Image 1 (cartoon, rainbow, N blue to C red):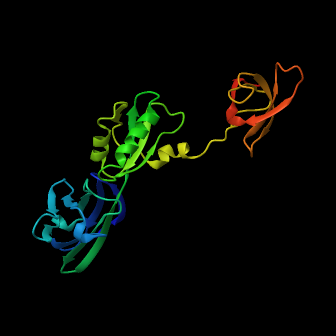
Image 2: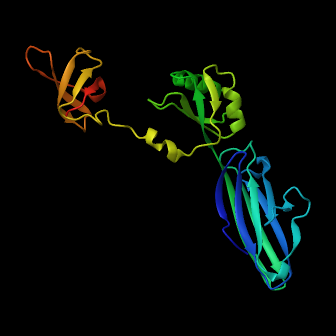
Length: 266
């Protein structure tokens, strides 16, 4: 048998797929299946394991009573198979299924092993504009009730109308948001952590500000005053400004998030 085998992560309700080929000078082969679940085999949910041929016809499923099948190898050419494993919607993080497939002919035997491990889903929830925090707070309260299958709720500053939700069972995620008034619906499909990674990296408060910019102070004792940037301390995320309308030019040092750029240095 020739194929990828190995381990794949799969989300609850989704499928992992492997393709492999069986080659032999014989015209038929016996394929045996050994399926086990973990890490707690006694309480593990039921995974669906199915073997298909190249046409998509089902050859074997783990719900069958027999753990082996006979297959022809037409014209003694490589025969293609597809193994599909569906993760149960009730799976917990780290639940897994292991499948060992052994093919035997009079020439000998060959084996491949496959492993699927359940992982959490990352979904995007639409919300009413500017109600992201309200929705996140309501969902967090509901996350404490019943099955604890919501792992994280993330509402990035500056992203309007969306909240990221991480959990295992996507059906239960939808159920828990159903009666939150400011919540709309989940975006179809799922997202990857790489797609939101830029929201997870703190952005410097002075990024985009350069010496000579005209800024408005938005908080502190000089709130509302217009000033020009004189110096920037990247390490402390502070800027030194000079108030435009002050009788005597006095440098004032403020945090980068205390100003709003109103005119860029030309």
